[in-house]
Image 1 (spheres, helix red, strand yellow):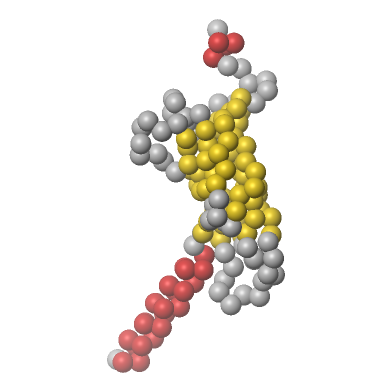
Image 2: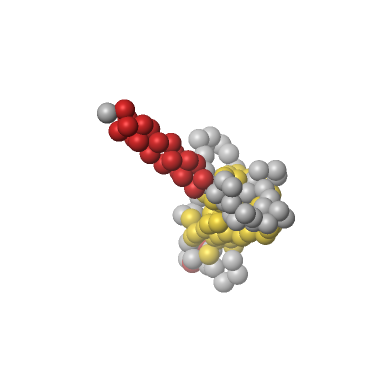
Length: 137
């Protein structure tokens, strides 16, 4: 019975360690970002860097605002770090990500991309050739 309990405890520890390595974390820095409205969608792109090699699946996560008066939409620039103990290059490595999201609510005019060490705020612009409401009438 003790062997079985020890096996279950070991299995839980190993599973928890595997999940901890696959969780996404903020990237090291964000260098450049854009936010445009194209075909009734908000297209956000970001370029930045991670502190070592081995990072995978960079994503932009749009944060739902809890303050109705805010004029800035917050987006987190995240990626999955390398597994603990993995052999990786010790250098700043560039990453990029983009996301297509629903149009933000009325009043949002900026997008703030947040990383581990800095953030970049950019205005939301219309893509050329995208009709505006006044042009559609």
